Image 1 (tube, helix red, strand yellow):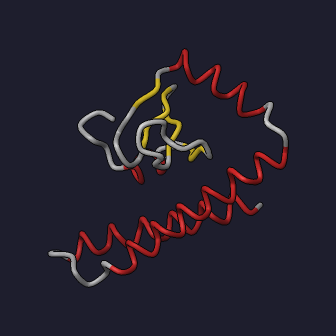
Image 2 (cartoon, one colour):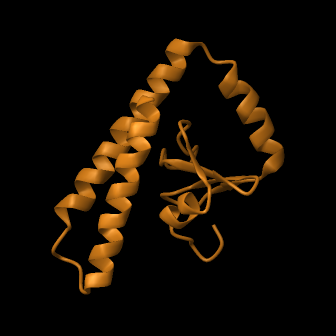
Length: 115
């Protein structure tokens, strides 16, 4: 990620969460502008590798897709819980507002996985 962009900013600009975890840290990844970017460590995968990843991902049996969706939902729920536990400890109201905005975004993503 350039200058360590905020993952929620990438999602708000049209990025998409993907189910496959980061190869380096097992973090949640976001596909944005022909790259897959880890929201946790910032690891980037360029376009050439994305194409092969997507074809592998699409060919997975539905049961495997279901497992990946469940894993992603569990990771999102864990992250939501972490963010909620830190509400009230931010130094400024804008930091807290950003935290709440990210929580709302994660809930929205979980609903999309369910549909």
